[in-house]
Image (cartoon, rainbow, N blue to C red; front, side, top):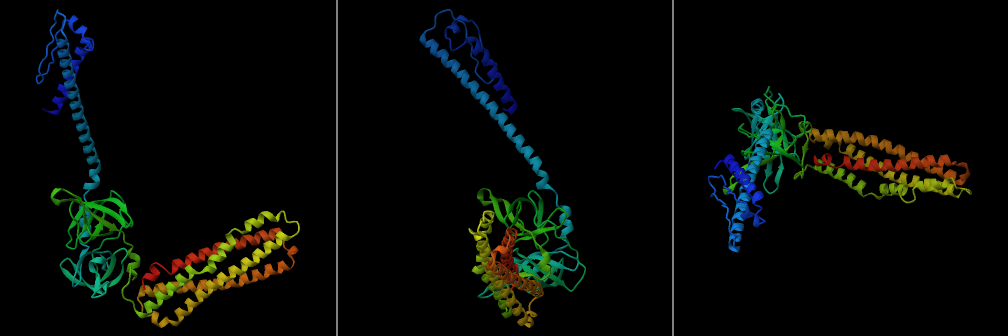
Length: 486
């Protein structure tokens, strides 16, 4: 039976029953025998029941029989109405699904053909003696971006040791050599420069670091084949995209509708399984790439396995700067002594009630002790900077053997460190004078005004903020990327 027929039949059945129930008042048995009428269900697929008038008084058996007949009718009516409602619900559900599909279809089925066609000529195969991975040319000079894991260099007994210095780059049907420029193990990205130099077809890297949700993407494999999908959600390492067909199993080059590179896709995995273990949907994480530093020669490791002697020396010095600053009690004590329970706020409230100069004297003693502690902390920072400056001077010739990016990083840090050394030297001298100044006022507290004390209290508190910022600056400078490249 068609759905429309079911709805019609159910409605007719329910309507035919209503006059009978209303007129017969079946809950009042006496009305059944006083009203002479015939009620027939006009449904071709339901048995017709006719009630004829009788003049004799009904027996108990007749009453029970009649009750059973009417209850049977009501039960059929309820089932028919329920069935009609179910059909309507199914129709509404299907309609909603269709509407949802129609709304989502533009996202999932947006054609990336133009973007794929635009990017295809720039897709290359990057090959080593043991592996192959897809790459993409990102400028006309032949700079190639590739997923680092697809061409890692390994060493027996050690494991992954970095990237191979030279690879084969297959551009169309032509084989060329590629020389390592840099890589970032954390973002799984590496860059090679094609040699010899030439003018190559390329695509740009998209301005956004990773694609946003519901944006269509395509992932290229090393053979230039592409699988289309859509970004489904943001994840900690980038964006997760889903595909109805399996993209490059070992990861690939992800592009958008404009053909611009939006990142590198990781290994694909099955997201939704059908019966018999057939995969209906695949997922892959797309990581954004900041190629600027890599092109500049950055070689960033998560856990570097091999180091040259000078790399070990630099890394050890940076780790020492970080550890000494982080563990030093001098800076922390200077900060807490100024901002702790006996802060200047407590003295400020009492200055107006100072009748005999006792509060003023206590205030000056607090200033003097703070100046001494701050001077000690500043002297520690100065000595740290001086030690590093001497290290750079002594290892100047060895530093020249490092890579370009390592040398440029050291040059920046050396310049910053020299500036900080000069700054700390001035601060140490200033706070030595401050201590002597407060000591002189202690000899004759009456010479200091309340305004002077309040102003100096602010100066000391600001110095506590300065020390906190300098500590964090030092920790940031000698950790993270700056340490990991050695």
